[in-house]
Length: 248
Ligand code: IPE
Ligand code: IPE
Ligand code: MG
Image 1: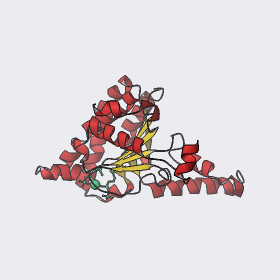
Image 2 (image 1 turned 90 degrees about the horizontal axis):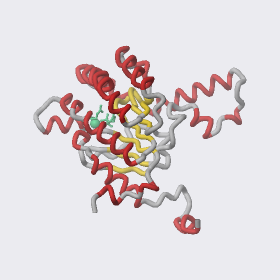
Image 3 (image 1 turned 180 degrees about the horizontal axis):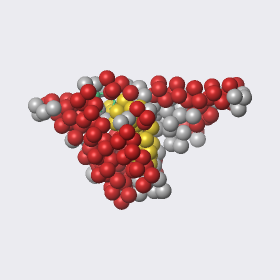
Image 4 (image 1 turned 135 degrees about the vertical axis):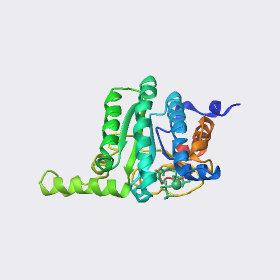
C-alpha cells in the first residue's frame, strides 16, 4: 500500500506547522554556498503546499525566517530577502490554481520595503481564496509575538477598554498574529534538530512534534505523508487518561 493510502482523511491535522531546516548543510555537503541550499528549498515548499491542499489540510505554516536569523552574515540575509521577493512573485500562480490564501506572521515591518510590497501583493491577490491557508512566518519570533500581544492588551487595559478579567486565554489568543488560524496540531522539523527555535511557543502547547533527519531541500510528498501517518498513530490525551478517552 502506498503511503498516501495509509492516511485517514477524516483525521487530518487541521494545521501543520513546519520548521524548514537544513538548507545550509544540504548545500555544504555538495561543496556549494549556503544560498544554493535556500534556492533549493523553494521547490519543497511548493510540493508540500500542493500536497497538503490536495489532502484537505486547512492550514500550513512555514517558518521561513526567524527574528534571530537577522544575526546571520549580511550576504546570506540579503540573498534570503531577494529570494523571498522573486519566489513570492513566481508562486502567485500556483497559489491561485490551488485556491490557496496567503498570510504572513511576524515583524513584517522589519523586512525590506520591496519584500513588504511583494508580500502584500500576493496576500491581496489571494485573499478571497477559499482553499487552504498558507502562512509564511517571516522575521517571526514567538517571544516577540507574545510581547506584542501583551503590549496591545496592556494598552486596552490602560484606556479602560478591558478589565483584568478580560485577560483570558481566548482574548490573548485573539491578540496574537495567528488569531484567525486553528491551533497547530502537528509540528514538523527537518534536518535532525530537535528544538523549537522560538516558533509558535504559545500555539504549540498541545501539538504533536515530529522530527525527521531529511534536510529541507530533500523534503518531498512522501515525507509529508510519513509525518501525517505518524501523527495519526499518536494518542492525544490533553491531560486526560487513556481510559477516559476510550470511554468517549
Ligand atoms: C533553514 O536552513 C533556512 C533558514 C533558517 C532561513 P538553515 O539555513 O538553517 O540550514 P542549516 O541549519 O544551517 O543547515
Ligand atoms: C529555525 O532554523 C528558523 C527557520 C527555519 C526559519 P535555524 O536554523 O535558524 O534554527 P537554530 O538556530 O538552529 O535553532
Ligand atoms: Mg538551521
